[in-house]
Amino acid sequence: MKEIKLYNVIFPIWLLIFFPPVIFIALAGNFLIDSLVLIASFYVYKLATNSNLKTFYKKNIVKVWLFGFLADAIGAIILFLIVILGDYFELPYEFFNAISYDPFSNYAAVMVILFAMLVSALFIYLFNYKIVFKKVIEDTSARFKVAFTIALVTMPWTFLLPTKWFYYY
Image (spheres, one colour):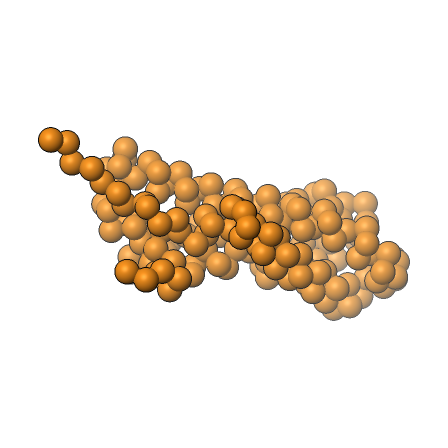
C-alpha cells in the first residue's frame, strides 16, 4: 500500500491573499497602505513643486497599487514553488512546513521568506522608479527616495505571519 502525504492541506496565509474573497480584502488593504505611503511621500520629499497632491495621487495611485500587488505575487510565487517542489528537491519537511505555517520555527525558512520579501521589494522599487514615476518625478534623487520608501514600507510583511495563528489544530 502506498503512503499518502497530506502536508499542505491548509493553505499558508501568504497564499490565501490571492484567492477570493480574501483577495478583495488584500487588494483593499494594499490600496489603503499604498495611498498613505504615496501621500506621505508627497509631503516628506516635498514633491508639491511639480503638481498638487490631488493630481499627483490620482495620476499614480492605481499604478503604484497594481504594480505593488504584482510584486507581492512574484514573492509569493517563489515561496509557493519552494513548498510545491520541496519533495522533488528532498527538502526536509520541517523546512517547507515552516515556510507555510510557522516561519520562526526554522532559521532557513525565515531566510527564504526574507529573500522572497526582498525580491518583492526590489520589484516594487523597480516598477515605481522605472515605470510609475519616470515621467512624473524628473529629479532622480527624489524619484529614488519615493520608490525606495514605497518599496520598504509596502513590501509583503505578511509573509512573516505564522499561519498557525489563524488555524486550530
